[in-house]
Image (cartoon, rainbow, N blue to C red; front, top):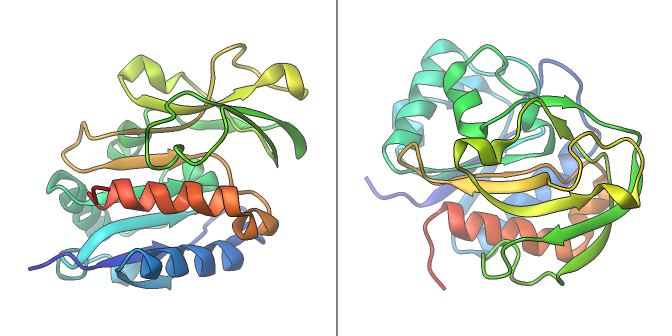
Length: 222
């Protein structure tokens, strides 16, 4: 069955970001601009093998807590292991806390964040579709997520780093990952910690970051 669409999932079982509607609208629009059909849903019953067989990529948009049924977990794992794309945005780092496969995909877990504040982001890979449009260093306002372990230790490809010298409350030091990707589980997995505010999703640089992430996760080539 051809993969031709993008499923944006917005269910929360914990904190719910007020940026989710803006983010869902942006991701659906960006997927359509990329040539895919797209829809947003918070219905866990959407996660079936038959539904995900049509997906070029699944997006978890600031999902928190346990948001899938056991059959849904099985369908999503099969999607990824079968070569499907998976994009996790912002609080999706705090989803499915008791599902080991999801933790392995992330390569870490959410640990906390300081207050929302401006800081600087460094681009580590200027050639990746999700970062190629960005300057080497760019100013951003977000929650600057901290993580329980460094994902680089499990072999992910880090794309963006936070500059902890430009804000207060960081816990990782000079090497603070914000966005990374890998294909270790069979499909293409991409994570960005950015995207806390509704305004983020109207910002051209961040929209281009998400568009490039979708481009990569769906296996598109320039």
